[in-house]
Length: 176
Image (tube, rainbow, N blue to C red; front, side, top):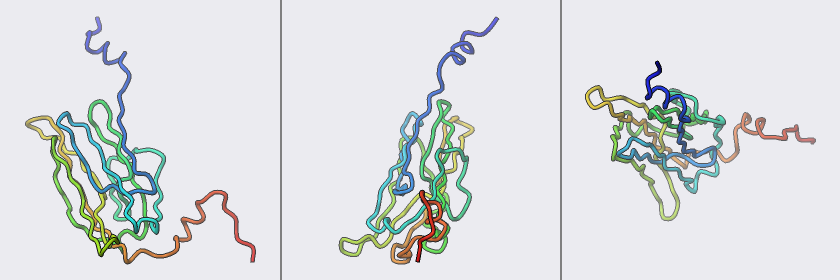
């Protein structure tokens, strides 16, 4: 005989929550609600228009391990497991420095990155490079360790990299 809890589990649809910054915004913060739900906060600093990132269509990674990626989105399943969308920007290691390696966020807490300003111009900002989900063995709750980069706007190139232009559709070679 099938257990009633197992039957209900099979009949109920899987609940998935997601937050996405995409290619045109960066994750500058993260909030973990007391119930364990995660939200990322996205922004487009005024120097971001020069940034060219390549993001996948969905969040499928358990970690953004490359030093040239940041978290462009998260998907959270009903069991609170987290998948990440890792956006690639080849020049990230050149234009950024590590601000925090394992900034811990617990349920009921949040992190919001800093922006450095020169008048009305953003000169540097913090963004989330990776989120590591860790289950506390005593409580069973998840905590999150964030890798935070400080991105220095003045170092951003004025023209997009060649790989970015080739990925735009339709792509054709300019006629001289």
